[in-house]
Length: 345
Ligand code: DAH
Image 1 (cartoon, rainbow, N blue to C red):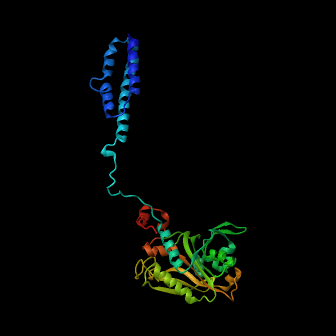
Image 2 (tube, rainbow, N blue to C red; image 1 turned 90 degrees about the horizontal axis):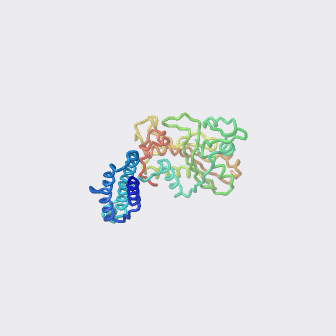
């Protein structure tokens, strides 16, 4: 007698697995047969009393397995039928407005750098990128800063190799030397990129930052051309009535040299930590290319003259966006970066 009931249970199990469920109606028929209030499994439980006592436990487990198989199959089939059904619930309404999408945005430094490239592009400056790891010649010596020149102290350098000396470039001016060596004149380039110095990190300084270098070499280039180019840049970058001043300065590769300040756009004049309470912020160094530099790079300094400048990208971005701590640009804190997300320039 027991064997017969076991067979019955097993054949119900096989039936459950093979049951042809293709639509809501067959699903419902399945449910009534195996899970409804008068389901066939109840008959199995009723047979319990006819089982040999030593096989009761085995039978109980089998019946449970049949029950679970029925419940499991019902659940999966009702899930898959509803996801493939053409019921209105599952068809997206294409007329609804689109939901919010989290678009990425460019980093504020990239936005500012691209803007600089674009402004100088209008004046005919082409972009040339130099290497970030460079040799002593291009970063210093060719630029009139031989070894033991005191001006090297201005830029505390990260060396990656001592013999021969290789370093993380301390200034994008190194790109000037690479470009001049090519010997193709006239030259009108800008070179944006990252530079490195062993500086203590603070709100105004970092060990890595960005510069946009500019170089123009041709016949009869004058300081007036330099000044006009930079004033044009400042007005285009910020606004037309920004105030600009050039202060005499020193750089080994330019003679004469100057630094350019603009009115502090963070405090608007009265003085803050960024302008050190002067109302002016330095944004670039510049000057007429020293004849020594031209000669070092094989250019006839009797025939050609030129100007050069190096703009700090972080400093410009701080003023452009009114950010008073340069470190924010490097921390990648989403709360900070998200504020620039809509700017896709
Ligand atoms: N390389 C200089 C610096 O990092 C900036 C600079 C000054 C670049 C004068 C120039 C220049 O091309 O002519 O401080």
